[in-house]
Image 1 (cartoon, rainbow, N blue to C red):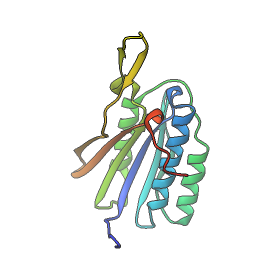
Image 2 (cartoon, rainbow, N blue to C red):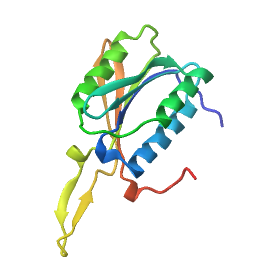
Image 3 (cartoon, one colour):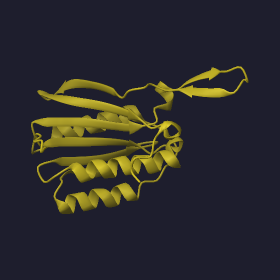
Length: 167
């Protein structure tokens, strides 16, 4: 069954701080690559990465075959570095959506991170080993910005709980 969807303006915010190194970074690359493959020429994508400071790696760009190729090459080159500045990054992504010349009816922000500051609670079990407990579902909210409703989704990476479905 074929489903139609409205064209989207999508801003991805990618956590490339040190805590995302290794398996988490590989999973992030695979997820964003998969997302990229679902976009078409009616969609627009912006890639912002953050560690110590946010960096716009790709401005809002139409996802033609050339746009998808550029996005994938940026995704493939992601590396982790020190620091974490999610608040500054959120300011940058809202600026991207506010300044866009072309506006699709759907505008979304997706934050991909391990959210260690907000979502990991440390507990001690009987053996005095620490275990992590994470939220079971992504955070989803929406906000009004420039007279447009914007969906904001936040997904956590926890590779120790992940099932590899990309193989």
